[in-house]
Length: 185
Image (cartoon, rainbow, N blue to C red; front, side, top):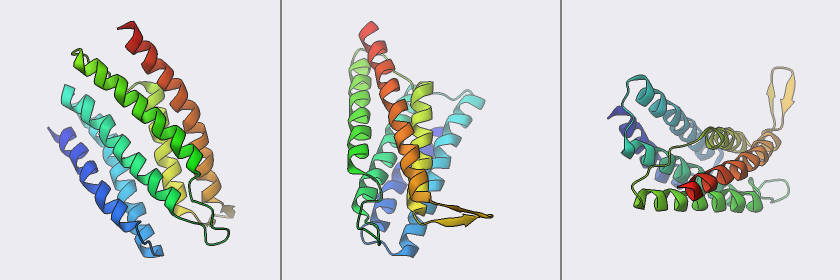
């Protein structure tokens, strides 16, 4: 029960996150960042609680990845709309977002077909790595500006783009795994 509540909380936070980024000030971006970090933590917590207390449900197996997709896709779409103060480029490259969205729609479609046959396709390791990299990338992109971390000046925009690029590799590989699993069944 608690894992599903955490999943639903993540879904409820999405419209708040999106609202904050419609006409963002630096303060609104910071609030959106905090909400995204909190929502990302609930993603980890719901899975941990479900496994630890043996409360994994078919509803949770379906809702958790769906909530993750809605959170990540909403964030990526909003990041394409945000523009750099320096050169007006989007905070997230549109082509990367298109690849990620296409993969998510493909895998969701495979899961829907499996569900129609009475099967539940749970998240796989590659998909979990993909999600973690995307969430870290989105956090870095929301931080956006270069900042000092100790003696090092970190370009969070570059870190975010790099995380998204690596996540695309995991996205494609895990989509292939899901497709193979769906075809075998």
